[in-house]
Length: 475
Image (spheres, rainbow, N blue to C red):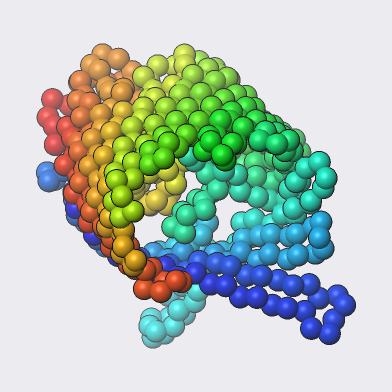
């Protein structure tokens, strides 16, 4: 599989000052606008023709339809900041499209039947390009704490689970409607928070005041940050619970007559994180340990399942000199065996990616629609990545080698789990664990302080894991 991607990004800064008005407030605007082109071949991950099987959800890794993709996307976000007074600042994020952008040519609101065939050149903007208020919160500065109230993003550690989407090309972010307070004493800080993640009514897709539709999270982060020693040690403890009628978390629905709602869940997340720098070497380690009641995951009338999932990520970088650095990233992200007693798969945040092809795209969405083509998570894998960078005044050249294997695979005569499509199935054949290896190469060119041009080329030698069809024949 080969990918070529070109993209252009620019940053925007606008400052508006109040003039002759006692009620006007200074507003600072920062933002990002980016456009890119993606050209991919063999997105079916096989050179063989994939025939749509008559039995749905049988575990096959085949993707039917056109196996090449060529599309353009954009990202646009604006970040206003209003300084109310010395103790209060209002911050936000505005964007268009789906989350922070969309695909060029998306014009789903255009209705040729109503406008007539003669109005060939008449189009209307797509409704999903409306203005989105992704964040809007207050920062209250007090003697004892920095308090945030409103809709905000959340970042923790390397961003493997909680990611604020701070990179210009991050299309997703961890959104929290709630309150948090950061209390600092010397090098120590404590950040308790409470948030409502969702209140969606499954029947009419509207937020409902009734608590039976809520997803809530209560947590705290304890952190030790010694800048003199370049040492950060922290731990996050969070409790997330969802009520029975909320549809934020759906379940496996092999039975077409079964409801897709998972029911009540109560999950505990513990994430230790440590980062240390010694002169030219920097090492960071983060783990995510998830446990608790996970609801009716499989929908096979067995009731609620337990959650027992984990992920471990190691990231290291060594600066050979001011121009060269090399690094290593390794990790293990648990997968699910497919039985009905315990769910063991971990899905990392879609922003956290290790390669330009492997895990990067939701490949089924190229032909089947549904989720965003970028809504793809690292899961069920053990991976190793070796990378290097060369930097000059305007250029940054990048190269990487990634190798990965699957932790859980289908075994003949046992239940198995399809991690990309999120359903369990009965396996009649064995599946290989090789996910393949990938070579990536790219550059960033800083045209000026506000504009960067990038290009990437990636080659993924797809492993035999994806040749599985749950029959005697493989792709």
